[in-house]
Length: 144
Image (cartoon, rainbow, N blue to C red; front, side, top):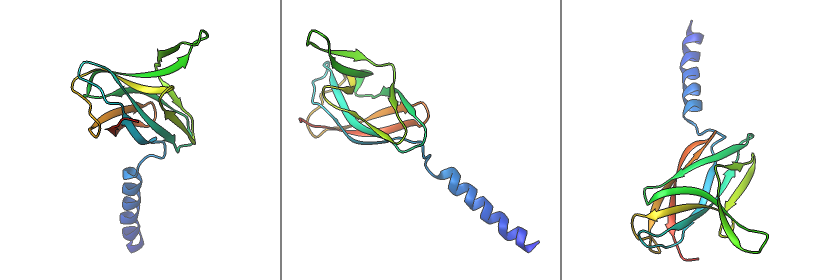
């Protein structure tokens, strides 16, 4: 009887520790920054996502209160040599890999800024992953 009474609290503590610990599938986001911009204009957000999990994930949505619209985009060169932007419905984040959102490539486009973004300002962007859920990321405005 005493052994059972001692084991039950330990099992409860173990369960709580497991339930409260971050999921191994939760992507990590670092080095988030955005270009300066004026209210009414557009800007872009860049960062690096690392997926430490053993399963692939998918970035499916981004949002921010800093703009009227927030979209996943990729810049690429077309066959004629002209740089163009293409809307992405999602971005794959492979297991045990990192994906860079950087100038000239993947980025989060903030369309119709609701206020000026000046160098040194900070704001939040929310990244929504199919498996990893929503992550709030602090973005710093800088002029690269």
